[in-house]
Amino acid sequence: MFFLTILLYPKISKFIIGMVLVVGIFLRFYNLDGKIYWRDEVFSSLQISGQLLAVANYDELFTGELISQTDIINYQSVSNGTRYADTINGIKEFEPQLTPLYFVLARGWNSVLGSSPLLNRLLTAFISLLCLPWVYWLSFQLFEKSVVSWVTTAFFCGVSVSTPLCPRGASL
Image (tube, one colour):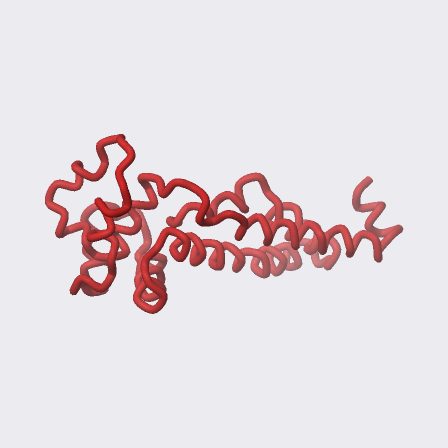
C-alpha cells in the first residue's frame, strides 16, 4: 500500500521521505552532550587516549558508583605523552575483538579537537551518517529502483529505532 502511494503521489512521497531523513539526521545530533557518560564510553575514552595500559588497577574507576569527571580526566587526555601504538596495544590486550580503525580515527579527532564526551559522541554521529549513502547504494544494487532505495534509506537508516540512538554512545 505504501509503495502504491509513492508511485501515485511522487511529489508528496519525496517530501515525506526527505522529512524522514531530516528527522533521522536531527535525532542523531540532538542532545549529544546531555546524557551521562556511561561505563562503555569511559572505557572507549581510555582506549582512545592510550592510557589503559598505564592504569594498573582500572577497577578503581569501574566500581559501579558515579564518579566525577575530575577523577577520570587524567586518563582520558590524549596529550599525556601516549602514542597511537599505545592505543592499538591497549585494544589488542583488553578488547581484541574490536577493530582499531575507529580508535585510531577517534585518537586523531581528539588530538585535533580535544577530548570531551560531546566531541567523542559527535565523531560517532558523523560516522553513523556514512551509512545513509551506503544503504542507498546497496538497496539500489539489490532492487534497481531509486524509489525503493530512498524508502529503504529513509526508514531503515534514517529513523530506525536504534540508529539515531547509537551515535549517543562514544563507542562503536
